[in-house]
Length: 309
Image (cartoon, rainbow, N blue to C red; front, side, top):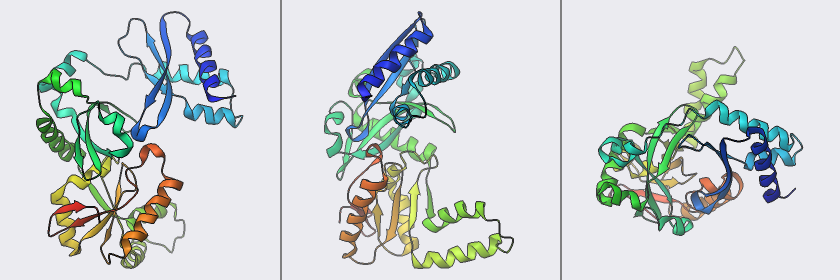
């Protein structure tokens, strides 16, 4: 079954299950880098919010014969009923900038891959990337509720983009924070949980990881939520302190919109090698929606700036 037919069949079955009293529709959402995703929105007629449930994962399950249309529709209805009251949105609060300004954050996306999208949203260009803004309504350990700030919102709030950027950056630093961990430390934390050998202690395992770190110094920079963490490359004071500790400049590998990898600078000849690595990883291991860039960046300590090498 083709995807367009699958969507319509699921829509029909969800409508049959819920019956009257609901507005149920299919929507196409254009995500980061122009990725198109389809969802079913379900709204009780007395409600002002319509939760959306994306269909791509269900279609993959359907193609592998794990479940049929009725099973999928039943799961969607169950998810809706279990989480329909989780959404918190007060349109009156959103109209009042003073009330919601502490919820505004910023993130980085690729400029060229989002040209059409950027026409409708306030943004600031940063090299070949763009800083965009979103308002966070609710955040849990499982999910977040947010919306992208659009040009019309600046008119609604009677503010300009500079004020928006200053508030968003301050909030992002304050509430999202940052973390830098060595790649080996991250791998070690995952592996150590699975160690069952009584001869391996935490002390000698960490000693082994530290020795191995000297061979391959790579560090992951992200925020505390590990979501849209690539924005941390805007934190100049953090980059400067990290450079001072390394006593060196460093390459910035854009592994995704959620994190970047930092590698101490050794030679300009490494640029081509790392660029090829980024492109290969993007093509094999990173979803189109999560890609940030197809090349590396370089932090220059003498300039206290990120540049394209």
